[in-house]
Amino acid sequence: MDTTKTDYPFTVEASPDYAFLNVTIPGGKTLRVEAEAMAAMDTSITMKTKMKGGFKRMLSGEKLFINDYTAGVEDAYIGLAPATPGDIAHLYLENETVFVQNGSFLASGPEIQSGIEFQGFKGFFSGEKLFMIRNSGTGDLWFNTYGGLIEIDVKDRYVVDTGYIVAFTDSLTYDVRPVGGMKSFFFSKEGLVCRFSGEGKVWIQTRLAPAFVKWADAFRKVESKKT
Image 1 (cartoon, one colour):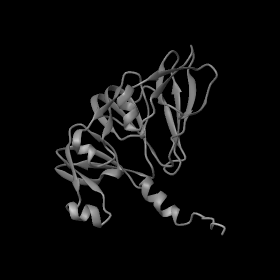
Image 2 (cartoon, helix red, strand yellow):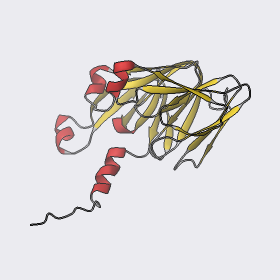
Image 3 (cartoon, helix red, strand yellow):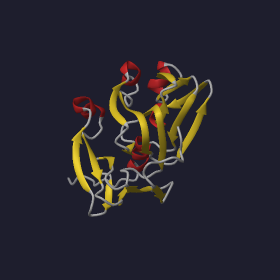
């Protein structure tokens, strides 16, 4: 896994708060992009929409469609904007696999095989990780976060709240459980945690969307009912 190698020259602007991805697609090459992420592009680029994952992808909460953007004879520019404010990470996989959470896949080279993977009851009880996006092969992969991004090298064991997990390598095993037992889960308002073991990497985000929504709701103006 490499963070410097790439088949698609790119830059990231406005990081880490409102990261924006600029990619140069080499002539004749294709970039696979999450639906609705394209913000700007050269007129020489053609787009084709493909369904990825079918019914499983729909159940996961992910969009059903991935857009393939193909450059013409010459190199072409495309700008990508994630749906949430936060950072963007890039990895160059070399016959490797990385799991990315729902909503965080941004783009990849066409050589990367991306598909929905059922995480069984481990994910079911978390309420968030029923499905993950499994990205395998050799090539570029970009994913985005809500908030900042922290990369963690796991050497033995590590615990992360499920809502903060963005991605992790398949060299890690994990299970999901309440942070302090079932009593704490129901009464302390703490969620479930993912207990990783083994050696690998975990990427976490510094903010949680539901927590922000709950915080902002206190400032929401509510009109009183007329009597």
